[in-house]
View: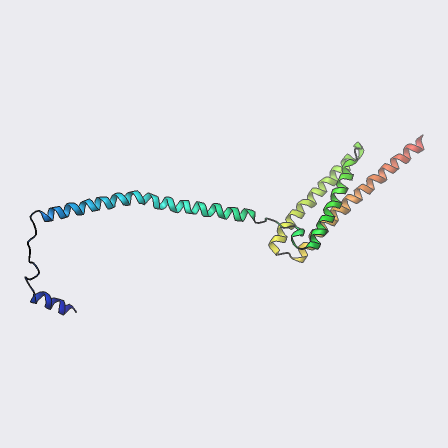
Length: 183
């Protein structure tokens, strides 16, 4: 191929240059070339800062949309998220615990205040453990051991509240009996 191009150029030497270029053509050509280079440089300078800005804006949009999706994802799971039966179980325990808490808080005897405060502190501790179990449930993929621990936590809270209420009732009965005997 190289030989054929050289052969054509050697055989037709002088036939390609038919017209003379006009005077000053080279200067006009270089002026146009410089004008184009200046225009290209200006457009490059304009768009150069847009490129990183558009990339940053795209990343910001992706992060914002991603945070919306990830913030909606639950950070912990409830028993009710497992099945309808577990939802009923959770509802039963929550109702029972709230009822017992109301009963406990209804006692306003100053002598019982310390017992009530200690019980409420213990309930808060059990609730904190339950929150940790909710996170564990989410991470374990509804592991039965975690579910069992969550139910046991509910039972412990109810038993604690019922036990303390029984003790308070016994104290009140003994106090009433003591008051009756001394009259």
